[in-house]
Length: 327
Image (tube, rainbow, N blue to C red; front, side, top):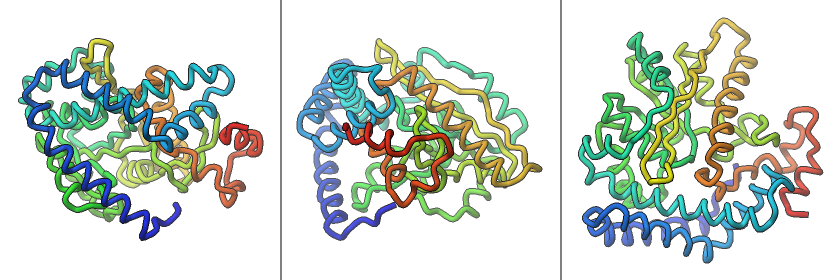
């Protein structure tokens, strides 16, 4: 990944301090008013974001064109990108409301649990397991719901650079008994939690350089950390998601557990596990395309010329890069 410049770091911290002041000023009111009205505010915030955040709007349009090609018209991509901003706004509002929810109120927001048997299967032997997820739907609420079900987790997150904003976000994330650790935490700490029967949650859809595997049939930089942990401990990867329903309730989805074969070749097995986790996320994004964070520069490392030789065979780098650039 490219290093963050001092100017860029300062800009991030100023922006995060602004968000902190904004969130603190509106959270009390958002928690008190009817949720339907609060979510309407979230939609409006998303629409404003779509208009004013040109950089992320362009990321979304580029990513959608890369993933869907000409199967979506320009107008359809713009509509979908706007919906992504709206869903992001709604999820932000619900995130700020988490501290005001009782366990009963949290449970009421979930009207369907798909694949509950997969969760029970990985819990049955008393060992820990690894939840793999992505920036789909309300991924923050997933942790709160699981904690209310008696399955608190240790989530590995990229903390905001501003300490005050980081502390504010951490407090909300840790409601219900969850724990958060910053990315870069020693693998030994994660191994100790898994071996003690703790659940570890990791996202798999941020820009990375560890491996390059197909996502929407385009190679993308993908983290291998979850697969490495699974291989070393023998615990399962459990793909899990929290998606928004049309009535603004939530559907929790557990996909089939991905069991590691610890006696196989290490590198090949880590790649297989990473592929399987990424394939699960892609299936969910295809089901709920307006709920994934297309606003992230997901293919940044993939189209860095220095990584071109690391692409899998049979992918046309120049053709896909041209599509990504909108040519």
